[in-house]
Length: 278
Length: 269
Image (cartoon, rainbow over all chains, first blue to last red):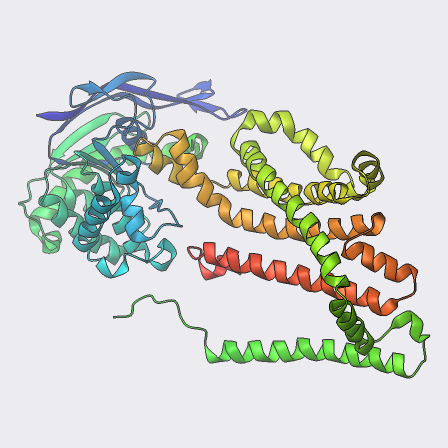
């Protein structure tokens, strides 16, 4: 069963005043980030989006999360059109975005607090999640007293606290060092394999994509649409050792094969990338 | 297991603190001794310059006869009412100007013009309008203290972290929830800075206003003592004002630290 279906999604951004781009010879003050973006995501699957910078992967997440509206086309979440943030989705951002004045525990409570869950229940849920991420000793720490890896664990815990059916993760590990990143991938997959949450995960790392995903969706260079979907035929439950297996390399190669041409294309006009920062 | 604990102040840092205290203190001490010698040696007319010992004696006298308490009480009341009003009025104004673009466009220029006007120069008008009593002084304190608050809170609203707002939005938070859970906490350090600046300005306002005109308050006491050549009493009055100012600042700084525990050490200092 598909939990998320995007149909003919298109997203245009107006450039800042005075900025122009050259789209295949046509000068314009608009930039098309997504065009004809069709994707079906199965309930409970771990879907990873990979694609060159500027191909609109994050924009797609924003639309699914209800934080941005498409220029045309629709996204269905459980057969309902997404128009505003849904209680069924949780969002993990690249920059952690923890509230600096809240402790780890209180950060995790935030989502529940916005939805009016009573304090005792909030604290109970938050403590369970801290334990799940091995952070029980750190519940009273403020974000500045936590390492980057710990901060991102708290951010993921915060997103899981509301028990979302769909977890949107926008390059959540991009700011971490390589080793911490692997550890967090292992933790994420261990925790996710114990749930029936659907995950849409954006990354630039092919290794990360192959390790985590049930399916990897390769997005074209801007304007983004789905180029190819690659089933990752690695067994579950997965652990870190799988990275050194031969099948891993095979899968990795398949993804890179689909992606290569798009990355090259994006390199041609990468100079445009900063123009649509918003 | 002690991971990531904030390091306790090391001994080196403590010794550095003691040395800097000793250096700073000795300059003040030398100044007082030099002053006393200047007075005792009668190089300068003693009537003009007084001396630390005489200031202390004058201080004891005005404490004993109740003069100080009376005037201090008046000044404190004027300050407290004016400052309190500035906080009550300035806080929401600053927030509103920072939060709503339209409000900023509408009232910003007017407030900037008001801020640029030297308030104390309006004192003759306030005396005409509100008399020589406490009201004119309260107005001066209010007008002196309100602008640092408005400006700081307006700036605070501009520093709201857009990423945090996205997080709140992703949980379907309303604008009011975003205001309460993000804008207000963001504003706290700015509020403290505003309160400290406002306290200094307000204190200055109340003293100058009393020197200007009136029959009560520390400013009046200083002005009267000066015009009757009681230099000891002038210095005693100035000392009281200075000590009050420092105390207020320390209290507000402590308050800031208490509410700023979540900021990294680097950001607090």
